Image 1 (cartoon, rainbow, N blue to C red):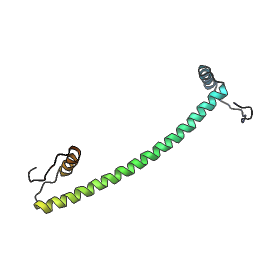
Image 2 (cartoon, rainbow, N blue to C red; image 1 turned 135 degrees about the vertical axis):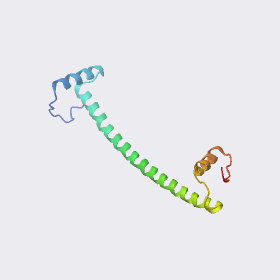
Image 3 (cartoon, helix red, strand yellow; image 1 turned 120 degrees about the horizontal axis):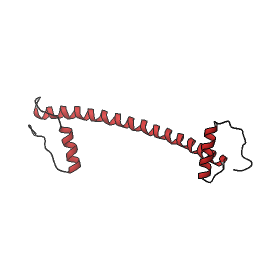
Image 4 (cartoon, rainbow, N blue to C red; image 1 turned 135 degrees about the horizontal axis):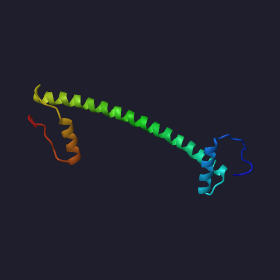
Length: 114
């Protein structure tokens, strides 16, 4: 640490001081360097956690949007299938079949009873 760095007195419990001294020895650092490294890591971890929280919020919004789009697509598909085959068309699983067709490349054709 540079001599120009800020100096201040710090009160900490004796057992914490002993643990910090042990870690400083293991890491070949002075007590001051050990404390600075640990404080820096803690502050950086806080920033990373805030970024993760923001990413989680963003993903939740995207998921809500996708769920809304899926519900809208299911509704549109239901209307379309009823229009094609009358009111007795079973539309359960149709969206999944279309998704499977996209994934596998194998065509699926909506036929009553399928």
